[in-house]
Length: 309
Image (cartoon, rainbow, N blue to C red; front, side):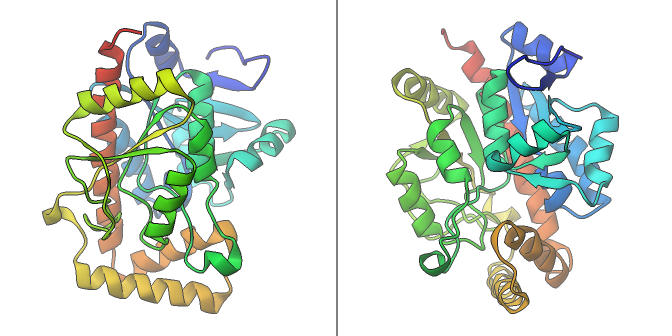
């Protein structure tokens, strides 16, 4: 392992450290998906599949988590086992990182904290499933994911399948615009809806391939801090059945409301409800879209590494 940074307990795996030192492509991966987004034991198999998809795209995977007060960028198999097996692992956004790091805590990183730690490590491409965003009823609850403000100040490419279906998609896109986060569709002008290819919202810009996505980020990097979100829809043939999607989403949101679930507990509660209500169909789609994003992220990282600095 690399020695800890004096400014931040940040530990790179040997493979990630070597790749970064050689300016080879690396893709960051969050660990909240493994710890809180997928059921056990399917989460452990998915961890290997997602890292394999990044490699298939031409990059080195760097799954990020905080273990015993140290931020790990790139996990060993044993560390991945721990993240996937521990039911009490905390969910760490940016606001939670200082506490976990200072007090020797452990936790899985969300989009916001993964983006921060990836950028600190020098990684410029990040693959996830779906972003957090503005929750429905946010006008009353003020419930908005920290992902949005984190992306406004963190320079990296984020490949995702849109935002999670339980959110207010138009409001989320408005906030991303207000925060000057660049959003482009991958081969589409329609913003994807996570489990489905079409959220109903239109995008201003699209890119045709990984090389164009890398060029957009290189231009953004030269202008101002902030992320480029590459919205990557699943092929229509691989999306969740529309009728099933609408029915289970409505049921999940109603169940969360009835249970009084609030804040960061909403997403894991709803995802678990969706998995059970759809008899595993949402889980299968979730894994497919993450693999789809990870492979594209690998190709974007490879294209970015080929550009002159």
